[in-house]
Image (cartoon, rainbow, N blue to C red):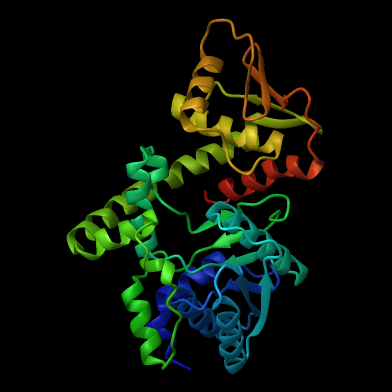
Amino acid sequence: MRQLETLTPALAALDRLCPAGTGPVGVAVSGGSDSLALLHLSHDWAQARGRDLIAFTFDHRLRDASAGEAVRVGEICRSLGIRHETLQWDAPVSRQSAARRARHAALACALKAQGGAILLTGHTADDQAETFLMRARQGSTWYGLAGMQALSPSPVWPEGEGVRIARPLLTARRSDLRHMLKSRGADWVEDPTNDNPVYERVRMRQLLAGSRVLHARISRCLDDLGALRAIEDVRLGRWLRDHVCVSGPARITADMTMLGSESSARGMGILIQAVTGRETPPRRENLQSLADRVRAPRAFSGATLGGAMVSRQGAIVHLVPEAGLDGPDPLLIRRLGDLRGLLVGQA
């Protein structure tokens, strides 16, 4: 096995993101260079730490070559002595949001069936820079520009309950990972959609490829914004812990007086997602408008946003599902505790 000293950054990230006692560690492997590099590095880490590793490949069934690519990943895993499972999308549709949800749901269910809670994905520094440019174009706040976090909850519910997405390669460049794979004699799959400029991410990738200076500047911004976001996340987590409670199977009560305007909008988004069970918050401008109204000293007659009814009694805000909706399953309320634990744990 390669000398562990050369893998120190990846080992340190995996140690930090994969605590003991969480069962086998899952790794999502498509066969592309990023995920294949993650497979090799996590395999080295697992052997050094005595951890159980299991690889998952999700076949979207949207390209003729995808089934063969999944078979190839299985062969690579067998050669490394890693358990591997191929998951398939039963009802594929050509919509990126639907494919993303199906993938995360299948991966989360398969991982939990094996007793695991941590799923590794191969997002890199290049992905971070591309995301920065995409969000900047969309008018994101500094919080969104901070990019993907090293550890986050699964984005699907209820399938993803209790599953954490860990990204140990966020500081690694794709070119370095490919050099590592070549040095090991490992070949990867090139997805043709990665070169199709119809996708915004591909256009951002091409822009970055033409300017090393731009990539370096974005990396510095990401470092600074990431540090600020970590502070903000801890503040939100402590607020969720100390000033928010579940007062019934379909009611959340919160004191928002200690949050500033911008933080209140983020907090409101978390609460609306929790009480409605929706996987994404309402639009930022709508959340900001509602949060400012709730915090204002004048009378607040109530409002509905994102499927939640919001009211206020004194300084206390109450959220329930919108009239006409069935009350959410108790699992959905547990989302609040799940996110609270993740954010507070960053302190």
